[in-house]
Amino acid sequence: MSRKIVITGATQGLGKALATGLMQAGHTVWGCGRTSTAINSLAKQHAAPHDFAVVDIAQAQQVQIWADQLMETWAAPDIIINNAGLINKVAPLWEVPDQEISDVFDVNIKGTINVIRSFLPSMKAKGQGIIVNFSSGWGRSTSPGVAPYCASKWAIEGLNQALSQEVPSGLATIALNPGIIHTAMLETCFGQQAHSYLSPTEWAHKAVPFILRLSENDNGQSLTVH
Image (tube, rainbow, N blue to C red; front, side, top):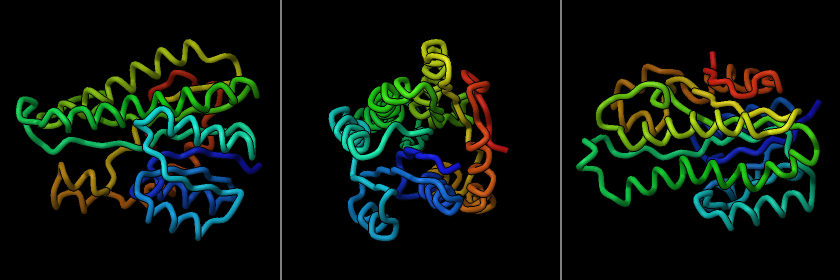
């Protein structure tokens, strides 16, 4: 059965690999990103019912407008994948610029909240839906140099736990650690060592079926793609 799937951060890395894998599997993807050239390219390659829009998820009004437009044309999504995320440049906490910390929190935490608040009511009205909130190994452990990022992902774990106690029967919210994948974000932390890990496309071969298997029974779980 074809499903309607919202993916944030769909223009690169894990989001783009997931969008591609899900569309190849016959599902409808509604993706967003902040880079207009990348979004326009995706929109040209993938016509309706797929939809790709320029949206800054840190801006609640932009997210709500995007969600409203999709709901007017289609219906509630079956799955939301809150993938978009930023990481700070590796440095001790006291050396990370204030704006960089704000950007990490605005996208990773507030952005996730904005997407949930904009789309969940339609899922609630339908009585079913899965929300996948991307966490990280650094949402369950810590390392020096990435304190703001760790704080944002630990926040996602707590947010997910609380939200799982609020969603009605038929819905589920899951915190998902994607694992360690060779992305531009990983290169900022691991340097050349990042090349020894799976590419986003290789990872998506595992992640797509894993996400599609999630159900109401997984509500509140902290899971890892494997």
